[in-house]
Image (cartoon, rainbow, N blue to C red):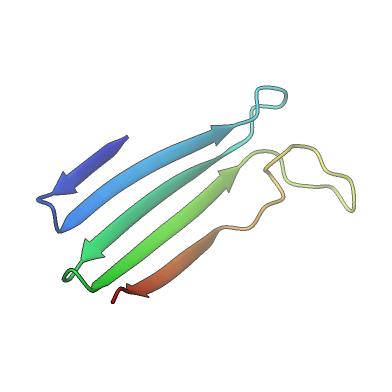
Length: 76
């Protein structure tokens, strides 16, 4: 799914799903286009599912940490 605020701030969302155990990861991405030479992207990842018990995994994505990424790109 994508949505944007003009051409300067495109937004997108995603979903990874494991049908075997019902776990998954929700993703979101925002990209700011400052100019033809500079962009900034920020993304977040929110996993869900049964968390591990000790060293035993109980779902595909339940043991994954929430995380994010910030990336700046320069074009010349």
